[in-house]
Length: 284
Image 1 (cartoon, rainbow, N blue to C red):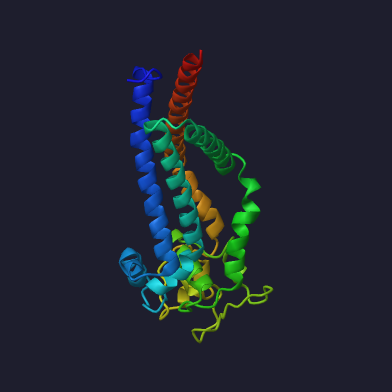
Image 2: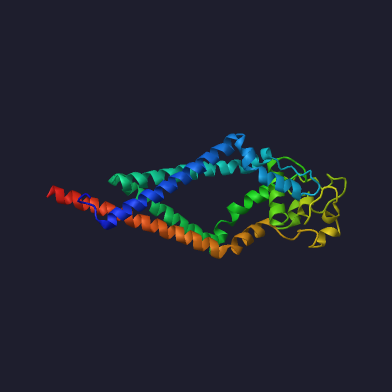
């Protein structure tokens, strides 16, 4: 045991080593998944197989497009996020591992700074998510509005239609705020309300049980029946309702993660302190 080591610092180094190894593995996995999504390798077929089959069987008509190739379009942007998070977590884990196990002070200092910034960002995110949601309303809602304006029809294969179909089926909703978002007179709107040969009031996917062969639920007066159509349930509201339903769980788990990160900061700072103290005593 070195001059800068005691029971607390040894325990801290072990904890930093174990937990940051796990963080590195998580970062590596996120990075690989992000690259797979971005490059569209055959591995994606296995990764998305369950989601593809579930959606295909859910749409009774069987013509809604939702193959793996459509899912790639759906999550292409997410690939950049996965790669970014993967690199960040791998780097922070590597710094913590090297700094803790090898007692590299500069690595520990950078590690502490990055971890403190991460903790601060998470606290701000929690406050915005559950207390100041209006701060992000515009940036979150606008992409949904843009997708709605580019929505075409039940079985269209463009990424905007596929994404909205998936959201409307999964969340049991219709449009951003309601079915009114799908009006043909909307600027830039592309929805073909007569695509099935009948004049629809809502897209077929707004129906509780979407079926391209039975459009009565998307026509008047069927669309007004909540048991047949989700016309008045906007997807934006339903997204936040899903989050709010799990509020206690999200806050609890996230708070536990923040506390764990704070413990890592404490041990890293303590190890830095012991190293500095040892260096000072040697120089005397």
